[in-house]
Image 1 (cartoon, helix red, strand yellow):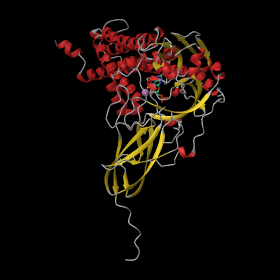
Image 2 (cartoon, rainbow, N blue to C red; image 1 turned 120 degrees about the horizontal axis):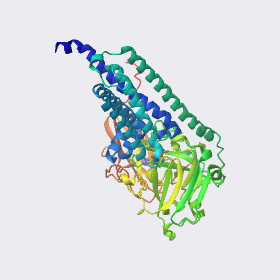
Image 3 (cartoon, helix red, strand yellow; image 1 turned 120 degrees about the vertical axis):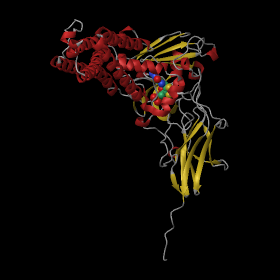
Image 4 (spheres, helix red, strand yellow; image 1 turned 90 degrees about the horizontal axis):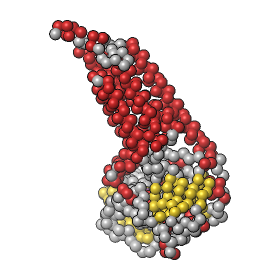
Length: 541
Ligand SMILES: Nc1nc2c(c(=O)[nH]1)N[C@H]1C(S)=C(S)[C@@H](COP(=O)(O)O)O[C@H]1N2
Ligand SMILES: [Mo]
């Protein structure tokens, strides 16, 4: 009894050791991730464990949670997700370190479990193959080795031996050296991994820089000046690339080398399957069109709608060339499945793609090759359909099939098979809860009903009558239309509502519906408060 108390470490040493054990766990996790990062540069960036787990979480997020995340964090949702995973990982790693102090084998097993989770996540991603499991599979033993080594220094156990009670002295020097060395090596490996991934991306960047976009045989109509009124706070007719909304499941933006890109067209009823490389695609006839994209996840009044000038190959004629007939002309396939390099699959009705609208395989956006985040080198754009059923980015495969035979990515997650864009309007200015001065207030916004067109936009103040806004000139059926209304604002708190009517005469419904399963409905409103007008200049007195 006396003997034991005398050799047992003091309370303070025990706390120090616990802290160092937790730290060992974290250092081991860092080593595992660094090794995995290095290997993922050789496989593909998406196979690195944190990215793979993040992607798997995105794949499994129920639509309601995804909707909430988009509302709460907007386009930062990915940063929040990755940050959350890293925090959890650090906590678990510290716990594994604490376990390892009591039982090194259990600690090592804990690290290996993480490797299995990372590998399983990587393999579960759409479009993944067995190499995607390698980074996690190789990282875990590295982390396990580091943990074994570090905890050995803490418990006084020599390499490979179990904790010996009498040698329970803390090997401070050994620990600091081992910890320092593994942090340094990990940082080097992680950094090298990043550099390698970046050099892979460099080829893609060079290929993008080398693209010379051909002139369209059918240019876009010039946008009439009256189609873009200059009003402070109003969304510009053409959305600058940096403001163009982005919605996708990619935690790392795919950087495809246009030089090795191929597109295949195959499937049911394809009499002449096609394979095209990027140069062949660029040699085809090009059209240029202004088209407004909209995401089905856009709330009433939300930001996921943007407009650009697209350059690309008309998709309908390309499919004709492959011998495809739409179902309305007796063809066997009613669904066109588009697949991307990152395993995404979207499904579009063949009849819609081939009904003569400007469905395109886009290579240019606002006069430039597509930005990487918007799908370089090639994406689909189909006017009138929400992005998730039409706008496949980083496109590499078109398969003709049926809606019965295949459910694409979003449909499997509760979204509708077919999703034409619903008529919507939005007040851009004044902003919600703005404080205004009584007098004339310029109200402005956008309205869209792609491929049907907008005929009318009306504003209502409080419970007053609906009043016509002035519509900007129509640039085309496939784009949004800006509108302006001069409001004689009076003192007090007011609610402004907006509604649009499409060219067929259908008035935007006021019935509120969420984004799931086929797009939100309801009217956008903005509450503002109007102050007393500024005093007229007082003279005399
Ligand atoms: N490969 C791929 N393409 C994709 C998606 C995706 O997640 N992956 N998201 C789709 C959705 S939901 C929309 S709304 C549009 C958005 O296009 P943008 O990000 O260029 O605005 O891309 C579509 N194409
Ligand atoms: Mo979307």
